[in-house]
Each structure stands twice: as structure tokens, then as C-alpha cells.
Length: 279
Length: 185
Image 1 (cartoon, rainbow over the protein chains, first blue to last red):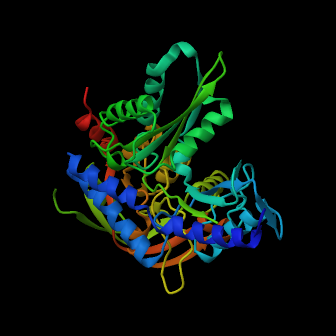
Image 2: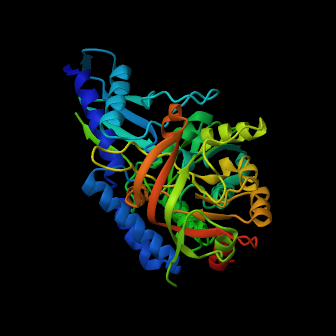
């Protein structure tokens, strides 16, 4: 049994919030480069260059790449041989978010659903904790912006809709979202499970490195076919027209009920921010 | 691509009329920030027949909720937010003399009609380029609704703020035209 003080978790969350919001992953920047080579629209190429320049400024000057520094979505993989001491894990995470958003000059973007009054410190965080073997704790902070989250959907298809039904729904969702979610986007897809599990799979799929293949060859094929159809829509960078509507489609799948065929589409803007640490 | 057009605020009907869908524009002068909650308050004031906290005639509203400015900086990261959420309020503001809106994403037909009728334009700034756009803000102060935090109305002095004309006064729409141009059947 290994003891870990939750104060260390607060400290790590604080750092990850700041790092994720200012330092865009190299995989995203490389995806911009690949997109620029294929993009036919001169305006589209200009936008992609701007996004690269914006990422450079964020990293060098340690400022948020996007003013929507998002909901702090936190994934915790907690080793079952870890004994947490010094306080409550969830409260330690909220405190890390509170400190990170304050000290990092990040926007506080959460409010009461009815009164719209800001919570003032960007808490609560959304926390997904999974108990795993071992004596380590892996923490991922993935800030999620509101504009792209608003374009996301969960649908309960029927088994007869099949793979074509999935493709049709995902492409249609991207088409209807148009310029709203800040294209080029990354399209997270969750298939199977239950209503809420499909949404979680879609969100988790966004954590995969851009440019990597899906380990399941069938899903890899579906990802690439869906991406091809999406990039024929013509929406392009920022919706101004072009070939680069999405940078990638990522899919996670699990078994579902014999009566069901759940599908979730979680749209992610080009500011695909996530940082991880293992304690 | 042609050279960008330089535009100084406040805008006249003539300034707005010469802009065409697809034009790249650099805005210099005073603009105001406002997004969801501030729009609702402005709309409610007008409905009650009260005055707005700033003179709206000839002005531009930028749909943005910035991050807090770091010490020694004028402004925090400041890219546009999605505009359709302001569609319910914009026609009333346009009728009162608002000449420009900066955001991202498509507007509905009611807003487009109001832009034609009262001569106003809709610009897009690059969504997610908040760090880059912040550099064009030279001065910032809160003029109303400080309690709204990032959603407060701020008076900004900007220099060469880069935007693109999406909707002009003739009813054209770059989002529709752009998508059509690059669509593969």
C-alpha cells in the first residue's frame, strides 16, 4: 500500500490546468501542418497559419491559447494499492482547479443554469475516476470549451441502422454544426454501452494522440471513411470554405444491449487541450 | 488574396455599404464587448424603454468573454464566441443603430434581414486565436455589468483587429458560399 497525500494531487491539477490551456500539444500542431499541405482554400491556409502562430504565442508567453478555457474535465486512474491521505480526493481536485484557473489567469466560465450567475472559480470540475490495478495515480486534465460542446449529441440508434447509420449521423452532425464549433475539429465518437457511457466514450476518445491509428482495424477503417466524407462537406477552417473541416475522427466502442445501438458525437474544437501526469 | 480594407469606428452607412462578403478588414478604434448575459440585459433595457449604458449608434459589438489580463498586459486572450446565441437580441440592437458585430458561426435569417434593412454587417474573427487577437487590443475598460465578470461590457480600443466580412448589407453569406465552393458531391 502506497500513501499519497491529496495535497500533491491539488498541486498537480493546478499545474495541469495552466499547462493545458497555454501549451497546445505537438500532435495538434503537426495536424495543422498536414492540413495546410492538403488545403485548397487560400483563406483556409491563412487560418491554419494563424492557429499555429496563436499556439506559439500561447506557449512562449504562457497565456491561454483560447479565451474559453473551458470546463475542467479531469480523468483519474487511481491505483487500487494507493491509500490517499490528507483529505478528500474530489475536494483536492476542485481546489487544484480553483488555484490553476486563478493563478493562471484563466477564464471562469461556469454559472448557475437558471440565474446564469458565475460560480466565480471555475469549479466544480467534472471528475471521472476509475480504479485500476497498481499503486500509481494518473491524472489527465482536459479543458473543454462551450462552443464545440454545444454541437455534441447523443442518439439511441436502432441496431438495423448499422455502420452506415453511424456514418450518416456523424457526418450530418458535423454538417449541421457548420462554423459554430471552430473547425477544423476533432470528432469524438462513442459507440455502444448505455446512454451515458456512449457520451463518456466519445469524450475519452478525444484524448488519443492525433495522427495515431485506432488499434481496432475495423474502427480505424470507419474513422478514415467518416473523415473523408466530412472533409468533402466543404465547410473548411472556421467554416469559410475548404477541405479541412475536421483533423480526425476518433472512435471508442464497447458492447451494448441487444435492443440498443447508442451513439455519441462529442465535437472538439481545434484547441484540443489535454495534459497528463502520473504520480 | 487582396489587401485587407482598413476601417475606423464608429461606422457610417457608407462605410458599411462598401463592405462585401469575403473582404478581409482591419478594424481600428473603439469597439464594445458583449455576449450572452450582457445581451439579455441590453435587450431588457430597450424593452422597458430605458437608455443603454453606451451609445450604440455606429458601433461594433465583439462577442467575447476574455480571460483575465496577466499583470503588465492590456487584455487577456480574446477570441470570438459563437454568435447564434445572440440572434434573439441582435435585430433590436441593429434597429437602434448597431453597425457591426464580430463573432463566429452562422446568423439566422431574422438577423440577416435586419442587417439588410438597417445596414449592418457581421464579421468573423478567428475562433480559438485568442492569444493572437489579444495583441490588437490597446486599451480596455469595463463600462457596464462588472458583476458579470468575463461577460461584462468592455470598451476596447483596438488597432488593426483582423476580421472577415461574413454577411454584407446585400444579404450575402460567406459561410454558405464558402461551403458550396469547396463541397465535393
